[in-house]
Length: 461
Image (spheres, rainbow, N blue to C red):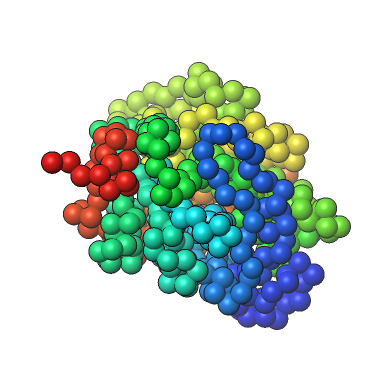
């Protein structure tokens, strides 16, 4: 049964609106929860209110891509596996759609209330930039704002340029000028955050008052949207089964999605619902395995990672820790460039949840993902998620990482108390799924100055 049919056939006290979009379905709860996180006036930059626009036909259409699905994938060593598919928007194929729609909805409400134009600025590893651009495009096509009222500027690492997707914001010359795409060259991926802060400082010093610049980085921008994962899971999944210990597995950089899910669980409890306390499995890669290290050892210290030795065949191996790859092509491998955050501020909260309710962390290598690729593909055949036959055509590895991490964790006995596992499908796509942004429409920069000049329309003779 499709998610639309299941929603239509189900009555829930949580659902106020009969929409396939989870954000529209639970809109009053999302709006109420958002109101708890009003930004404080710190003088460090503009952020609009957490208020959302009224849910009318235009807003419902704008929110329509935020759909999800739950699918049984069978069992592994007696443990039921389920997929929570959150990457159904064909224009992003990642769960970043949910938070991006809420961010843009807040911008729309501010514009409606004040008439002030907003420029959204997002330094991103790639997927957030794509989702924010899609959300802005949707707001324009839904007639919620005019092109000069809401714009988006993104800055992404050179390493993830191939993830950038074409849309009306690139195809239309006027929209392309209003919504430029910047790529940071000659720098490690995480440098986009530092350059983003410098751009914010330069903008403040410029004295420009033509628009408000919103540098949307707060965790709450994501926590609010991701509560719908738990609300949906309560309606259709395992969240309401209090006698069942379900592990929620997610490929993470900062674990915003799982923290949002947990906030949704706490909201359900506030509303008087019987809800199971979830356990969590964090899946990371070796380049940024900081959250796994913190979960296991309470610190980000790399000395706690196992040491590897090179086999005669050139593969690096270790057997000291079941939480790290047994085999890898490189002990410091970057498997997926979208995961670039070192020492995330969310680690303490996430580690506390795992300590209290169970779960653990596991790090995977590209070699392990390749060795399990056919197995992952077969498991996912029980869902609408189709991996390309040739793994070289895959350009987003989040879901394969998550599934590989789950299989490794089960086979290595890392989840002894689990009754079942729900895998959060946060992203997967391949080169055949989208048209990339043409190279001639990308602004390559090495610092914040050219970004500001372009955004302010400055020209150089």
